[in-house]
Image 1: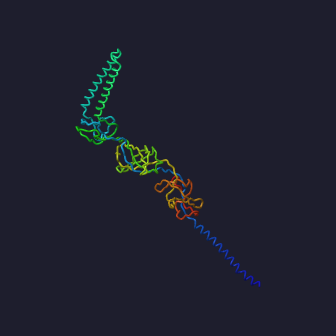
Image 2: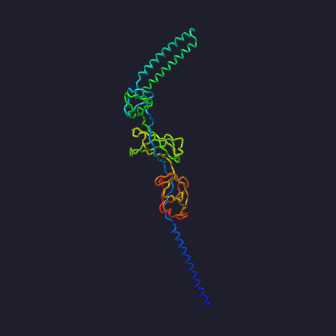
Image 3: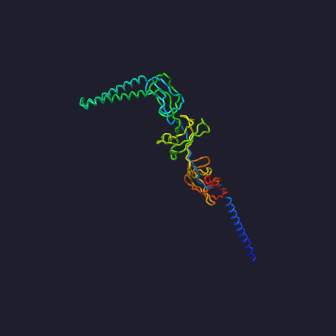
Length: 355
């Protein structure tokens, strides 16, 4: 009987030993699987760096001051006193028109004015002795004032026959000839102040916030490859175009060498330096529908976090919301990650802003 009981116990002990061995094997296998599940990733520490505002646009060059030189009166050109392309000063005479008749009218007006003033002075002496009434003296004064006004009118008509430059600038092509009869509004030439060029361009209203007078502007023209014209924003328009949803901006560019001409087409880049921002590599982004995510590593665990991005430049993107400086994000290996994944960091770097 005892031998039968012992024989019955031996198979049970063997089964218990087998179960224990199986449990140990499963635990070892689970540990190995856990190690295999750790995703190897490359991370980067988020840091602030200089991220200047850069806005690109297309603009048109305009002269600082620009007019078409015309005549106010109809008269014959008697003298042309400028050369095409000449640099002139304000007040320089450009064209003289026939003035004989105007000079004669001025001489008559001045003689009449002298006579009326003489009569008024005699009347003033007679009024002291009551030889003439106050009303007669007042009439003499009115005649004198009217004749003085005629003198001024004659002087103005004579001045209109001498056409001068209203500001410093460079004259353009001559469009009249000596002896030609010109009419009011006839264009004689053009006058442009090219010492400074006004550069007008449009930017989307979404870029309106950083725009302000004083921001640096770099402009380039296909006419001068490799040359950059530097200036500053002088003003931003007070209205936004409701059709294009853009705003007009004006910058001033120095043009000491007179390379830029009115009407030239320029590529404009607006720069605002000294702007720090959180910047991460574009490859760290995990887009899902219309949202952007990154994987943030804490210890050995990666968690998915939504962020809000801003401006971009090649290979980098600005983070406006969702991250803080010093946090660790995955820049390579995120395609194998899920929320709560265990990670193994194989390389850790600091963003360009952090050195």
